[in-house]
Amino acid sequence: MNRFKWNNHIYFGDDSNYFKKKKFKNQEIISEQTFKRVQTNYLRYREKIDDFNRKQVTKLRKKIISLRNSTKKTVIDLFCGCGGLSLGFERAEFDVILAIDNDFSACQTYAFNFKNSAVLCLDLTNPEANPAFLTEELNLGNLNVDLVIGSPPCQGFSLIARSKIRSLIENNIWDDPELINGDINYKKDRNWLYNDPRNILYKKFLNYVNFFKPLIFLMENVPGMKSYNKIIQQIRLDFEDVGYSIQEKILNSVDFNVPQKRKRLFIIGVDCNGKEVASIRNNHILQPQKRSGNKSSYPPIFKYPNKTSKYRLLNEGIITVRDAIGDLNQITLSGEKLAYYIKGIKSEYVKLIRRNLKEKKLFNFVPRKTVERDKKIFQFLKEGDKYKNLPKLIRNFYSQQSHIKDNEILDNFIDETITECMPYGDGKKFGDKLKRLIWDQPSWTVVAHIHKDGYMYIHPEQDRTICVREAARLQSFPDDFVFKSSRTNQFKHVGNAVPPLMSQVLAYHLLDFIKDILKL
Ligand SMILES: C[S@@+](CC[C@H](N)C(=O)[O-])C[C@H]1O[C@@H](n2cnc3c(N)ncnc32)[C@H](O)[C@@H]1O
Image (cartoon, rainbow, N blue to C red; front, side, top):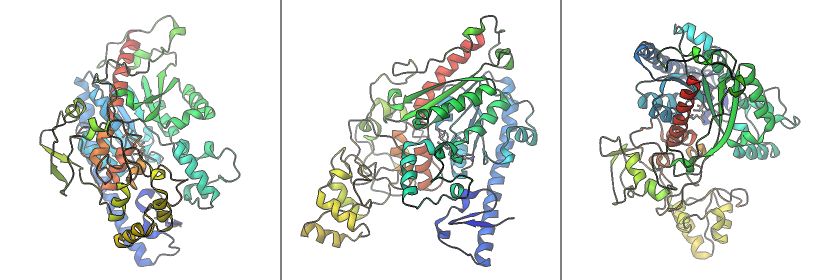
């Protein structure tokens, strides 16, 4: 096993996620003993994953046999995370047969919630995750896949990431080993964003599309990607090369009963290689008819759903934070399961979200501990207020004394003149990093950063940040969807997900679209 070190990362060739641990920060040389310990832990971790994957493969084999009697359309979800996108497709009566992600905790959550799907914990950049190798190795035969869906990460296109990376470069603290040690010099390369290795994971997605030749694929990404014409153009050409025509659109989740403004780019590809499109479907789907004649009308245009879609589950207009979490009472207990505390508010949205919940228990409802200092600061914020709305004296105090957590010192400061405590330093840079949600409006985008801190999501009236369940409700996850692993991971998975209600509407429209194609 090779061992080499990059800054705070230790790589054993793969599974680098495992070693992204703070404890190795700035550690130039590690002792043989530490190395042995890390190695042993790593091997245990690998064993756990291998064991998990073995069980999933058994499940997959059974699943494939059961498909013979099924009329559902089959889906593979790549970069599946905890399964927000999958959930919408399952609900729209697709059958997600296989999902893949390299984050073990996400896979655990996925496996727990999708009992009828197999999920593999694999790094899609590894040769073993190549679809040809995988199907051969797992002896999957001619697996028929109707749709490939997924969210290949392209962090370099996220507007937040772009400005963050730029500022890190400017301050000479850009230390991502993958990028520093790569071939790209980010300071000199004018096209550094295009060359960012994190932006080419979509090519792995493309490999799967090319291998399985689904009728349709759906790729989700950050809207920032659309502003790079060159990238969209490149994606279009790459997929055209393998016989797909793409159509892209930015949708906002707030239009689909999700109590959150979240814009996402959806790219749909339709098989247009001029062969008998329908004939690649096997019999368990609709009986295909030969596509004939009018080639110019093919591939047909997909009509993306909008806020008037007949597949929206609720007729209501905008769903607000109050609709979403107003029924959850103040949290006073700790523990994984807590009883429901209903204030008497039960919106249509909450009825929908709780529809399948068998027990009157709420999972993932333990908030982060709020330090006294923050409680005091939060009190200064009204609904919708941000860091920059704090009294100036408080901001000054906090930018200078961010290390002070001690309540007494803060009290003195407040008494003396100053009242401020933000761990964000300069308010110009982080003006909206501290934000209190507004009861009667939808939430702003719940981003994956919420796993680091929840300061952008302070409860509308309680002086604390929201908990995982509340974030999940803002993302339209139902209450019976349970998030596994550490709370930090839970937040990450929620923040990364496609809101299931949005995915569901899209999935139903795709189903209609497929039916239309098969009738052509
Ligand atoms: C935006 S999230 C996916 C969210 C998901 N579609 C949902 O709706 O819940 C992107 C996922 O890609 C996974 N990922 C990143 N790099 C990967 C790789 N090399 N191989 C496999 N998965 C990867 C991450 O672990 C993350 O879960």
